[in-house]
Image (cartoon, rainbow, N blue to C red; front, side, top):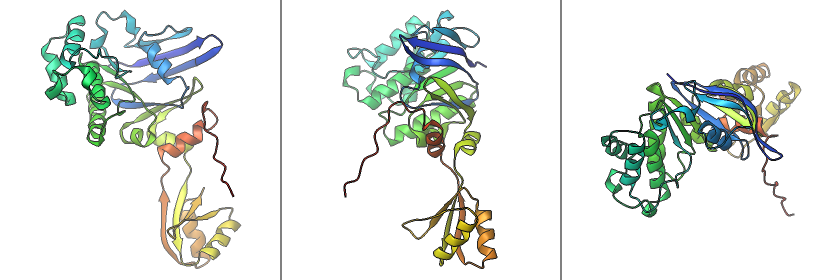
Length: 308
């Protein structure tokens, strides 16, 4: 089994430090989500891992070796960084045949991956006629061509339709279950929550978190309780005395932040308050991510000012 080891990695572009002393390990058998705001250093890290840029210091090892040391790297690492990489004048099949020949991969593998990603029927068309989603599938086919032990995907669901999003989600989890090392960069928190087992989060080139999905949400999410009562004013007063705030919702339900359902239920019972609904709300990945990266977002829009 093969891991990706990022060791004290730093990359500077002039006075800008895109990656700053970064260290983490991506292990096999799970899907690792690679998250961070724009400018956090995710794309730079992937480029450094694939030898497309040289680090200022530190290194990235894949299977204990630099990517550039492999004679046939596509057999070890499959990567999707740019769905526009295929030459537009070539057909999809010819594009993959060139890659197969360069890495001494049997040509029969081309048809296998075309079928796997769902574009076998259009493999004879020129790539320039492809939609973004079709190009994305071709890029994934290229990444899988060498049956690699390590798969790196940058925004793999970009341009895919709903069926395609479900398909790529299943594919990533199947690769991990087969013992592959899978690292997926994404800006879509709700989508990442459906496939990632582990998270690596960057901010301004530094490591902010390296944890399982469950531990990450528990550490950075906010506990909330959903409650409904026929006497909201009384419940608000009871909660206020205990240091909790009740926020009314449009549907008659209220939200209590920083408490558990057991806490709210006990307070209501002590005051003989009728409770019609009471449940803990699990924090989302998006909530936890935004809480962690709030001070590390380099590009943030100004909050709109409402006119009165």
